[in-house]
Length: 219
Image (cartoon, rainbow, N blue to C red; front, side, top):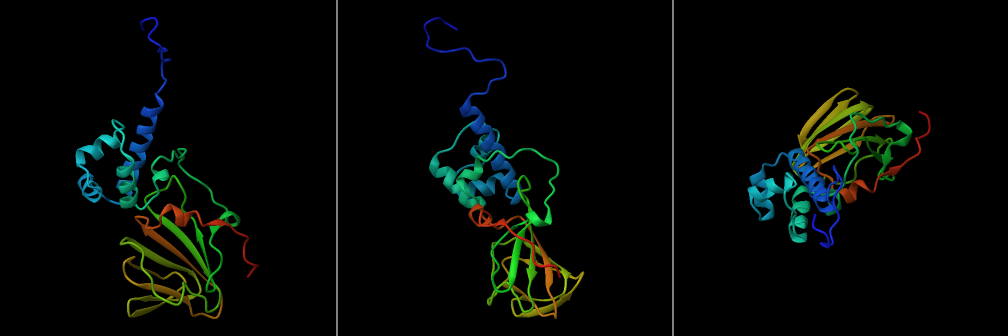
C-alpha cells in the first residue's frame, strides 16, 4: 500500500461488508429459488432480468437495484428483508408443543406453525378443531403448490371444489393449493390435522402473525 493513499490494509480473512452482503443475498436467493422449483431462466423471466444476471447474484459476484430486489422478492413470495436474512446453520431443531407459534383461534380452529427457518422448502402446520370447528365458512386457495392433509385425531370432512371427503384418524388426502378447499370437524370430539405444503405459499408477513400460545385444556 502506498503511503498517503488514505486506505488501510485489510486483515487476512476480512470480507468487505458489500461483498458479504452479496454472498448472503446470493445464498438466500438460490435457496428460495430452489425451494420453489424455479430455474434460473424462469426467475429471470418473472423479474424481467436475465439468467446470467441471476447466476451472478447467486454466486455473490454482483448486487442488484432496489427495483430488481422488489421484483425478485415478489416472484419468490417473500419480503425484501428476507432476501438478506442470514439464518444460523443447524441440522435439527426441537419445538416443544407448548412453544408452537399459533394464530388466534377462529371459527373453532387454532392453527399452529411447526416449520421454521432454516427450513425453507416446505411448510408444516397443525390445526386443532373444536366440535363443529372449521377453516372458515368458504373454500379458499393459496398459490399453486402441493398440499397434504393428515388427520391425527377425530373425523374431518375435506371439501375439494364440489367434492367432499370424510377422513378419520390416520387418513390423508393430497391436492394442489390452487384447488378451492375447506376442512371441518364433523366428529363428536376435538379433531387434529397436519398440513404439509411444498413449496411454501405463505409470505413472511403472514408467518410473522404466529405467536406463542398456551396449550388447550387437557382433553
